[in-house]
Length: 95
Image (cartoon, rainbow, N blue to C red; front, side, top):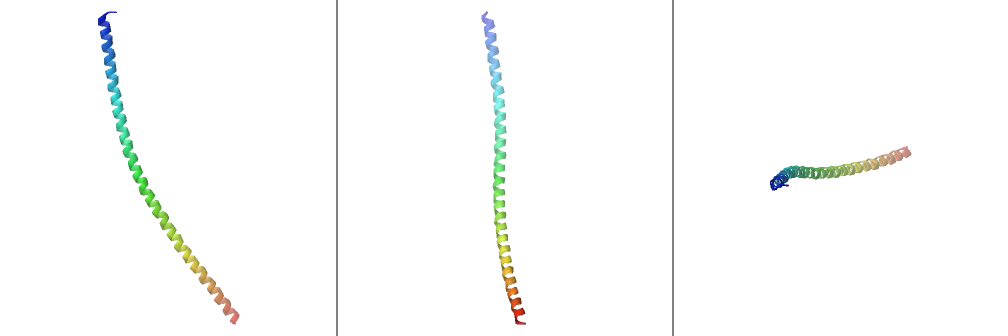
């Protein structure tokens, strides 16, 4: 082989390696951009999930209070109905 041929071959190998490196760096930059976008999106999702958790917790607390108030009202009505039945029974016995 001639030295000129070896030099041409080495130059082509070097140029191919440089081109490959540039392509790799471009792809790496694109991947980093997509990763940054994904990280930003995940941050928004996490924040929105946190807000949803707070909202759902408040809804559960409100529901529990509503159920407790409703149960107390029912207990009061049951008590009043029993008293009325007893009063009616006494009235019937008095006749």
